[in-house]
Image 1 (cartoon, rainbow, N blue to C red):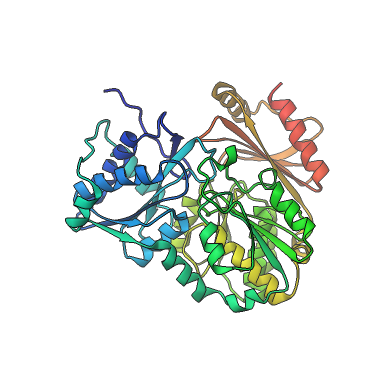
Image 2: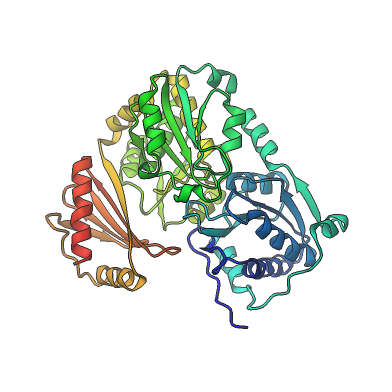
Length: 468
């Protein structure tokens, strides 16, 4: 039987359901995980769960059967859960590993397999590689049902949502948030954050908080283009002063200010650093992915905070957070972690911190962004995801690596960085990053300029240059 080699990307293994993401291949990955855990020479337990994507319960059953058959205890989540709930559960339940069946922000035709470490965040790159190398070409899926493994003492059901909600109630003053002058609107994008916000903020205006595995045909990624209903809701309702959105597994965040203007992850990272350091008196290193705005460096210099730039993939940031004192760790795609929480991206937690910031300061999100601009200056960021054939994608990246691009239309550059992708520092103070997606037929083009018009113009000139 010929089987494809399974490769983990920046955040887990993802593939199209029924094409490559099958029960059999999920069982193969789970056998590799079981062999890795058993090879470490101690009894292991694994927290397992899924989000609202198609087939989540079925795929979790395959994971559970394989792990239990290898003598590994499974703590199986009841109902759909978010990725942060799994990571928190691993830490809280003193488990050795977590498995989340989710494709995060990918289109609805995808599902995925994420690994979470005992520290309560993404497994380290070394551990992921070790599991990947142990994935067998063939596997036998146990025939015994879940009831058999529960009776054998190898399967226990856990309510991760209740655990997570109780934890958040300890971390935030929800009585004060309930009296906030700034009403919040929340778009779950049909994802795993929907019940948490419904329970914690009963006065919030809720959008897309129901079970829809097809996500209305749209990728559940919290980008401005995907959240126009939330933008209109905030802009047209005077009492709503903040719009919060999270992705399919609720680990990524997007925000809207009171005018319905999108507040991207770059601004959110800056807002969190500003609030935690200047208002809360907290210190620590800032760790950001290569695709994040250089304005973070500017703020860190202003506040005397150390900074480290990582390759793209939150697993690199999480590893730093486990080993060092980190104030904020974040990436352009909306995955951000903060001090005082688990070393994991968590869109709901981040959103609550910003909502707390607004409520305590008595300032709107727009006013808080103005505070940030006073420190780092104004900037506008945009990203263009080009759906192109893999051969063209690879040719563009090779051309960039071979220094074939000397300028992009009218925009010249003075410096190139290649930590992860190719980043061009423009003479106008902005930048451009070219990076191929590891999970989809996409070339991501990132750009920052001094205004929206300029940033969109940069993207257009880059597109014309690389597709010529």
